[in-house]
Amino acid sequence: MSERAVPPEAWHRLHPLTVLAELLRLFGQFAYVLVAIVAARFLGGGERFDDLYFAALGGVGVLVALLRYFTLRYAVWEGTLYLRRGVVFRQARTIPVDRIQNIDLKQSLLGRLTGVVDVKIETASGSGSEAELSVLSRAAAERLKAALASRQAATAAEPQAAAAPAAPRVPLWQATLGDLLLLGATQNRAGAILGGLASLYFVVGGYSGVNARAGVDAARALGGLGAWAAAAAALLALALLVAGGWILSILFTVVKYAGFTLAEAGDGRLLRSYGLITRYESVIPLRRVQALRLVANWPRRALGYWTVFAETAGSFVDKEAGGASIVVPLLDARERAAFARHFFPGLDLDAAAWQPVSRHAIRRGFLRAARLILLVFLLAGISFGRWPWWILPPLLVLAALWAWLRWRALRWARAGEFWLASGGVWRRTVWIVPEAKIQWVAVEASPFQRRLAIATLEVATAGAGPARGTEVVDLPAATARALAAALAARAAAAGALQPDGV
Image (cartoon, rainbow, N blue to C red; front, side):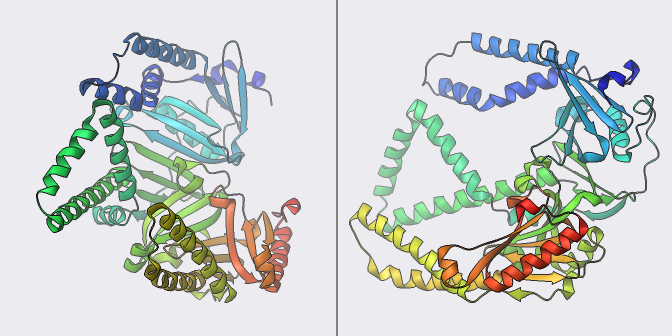
């Protein structure tokens, strides 16, 4: 149906605060430039910044915001979402409601104070949000979400009508403060924070000459303490930086995931909400879940916890882990099997008979690690003019240990109608894929793998996660081919397989 068939009264516009929201968003995109310039001028460096730039930026922002507010319209009519915008270059978009994968509501601190939200609507395209409505009043957003989620938009009055009584929400998982503290403490974020602080120091210091003065003062202070005392002071400073980054990582995690709740609406949908300053709300239809991905680094595995992601067709939620939707940040390992059954009722994860890959994977992994060690050793020797040969044996022993651990982590299984795969030494990943939702399978082998009669089996779904699916490396070649044929036959019988992908 064309948008011309939509009656005028079915069309709606954005909230008037769209103008302010768009202006703040524009300034936010240039915030790092403005902060760097202001800091440089405050420290006495850099050239005088022309204030006309701020005026021009503000003028452009107001113009863009006004155009967005006055030209963008949306309507839900007879099972279809319509959007149109533009004056000179007119753009119209038509999205069938039954193709919508996720409906996300994002509410910033300003939005919580003013009662407005951003709405993002995603389909199976995998290229991002198909529609972004920024901003709507909370009531209008809830009505739109109810109309889209229920797929009952037969009359023009539906978007305006009061939302139907919501189904009882059954909490599947709720975060406690202890969960968030543990999540932040085991997050690999301290290094990124330290790198950002170091970059900011060098950028700002470069404008004012702070770097040179600080370096001279530090050298003089450490030089007077003696070699051992100077080394101890340097180690203490490094420890304080690492501890500071670790504490910041915990604080960021608590702020981001505060109040995390995953609930089942009783109508085949999951409702997810979290955030202290910026509040996120998402609707994930269970029927659209293509796979589950369980991830845990070594500290979390040692403590018995995993992070669970749901791979939905075309999901681009919050740009998490390549597009996957995080459904539980910290799940007790003892609850994995029961939790997976909420998504896939026929799965018994505890009963899965995991199979190893070929033992040739140890040899291949060792050779790959050894090549990297030798390359770094040669580059270091050329750069510093020294060749500490004594360090090579322990490094090669570590490479052999890593290769063995890698082989131990590589596992696969077929549990009923589900494909399972596991891998990763430091960061372990377990994939759970319904075989009926497999889009394509492939068997690949490098020249070295062909010499050892091993191969890599790749299984992909319509999800938008890393590589869109799983791969199990270094399987015996015959096993890989047999599995590929069996999985392809199962997917073809379900009507999901794309022949061109095999």
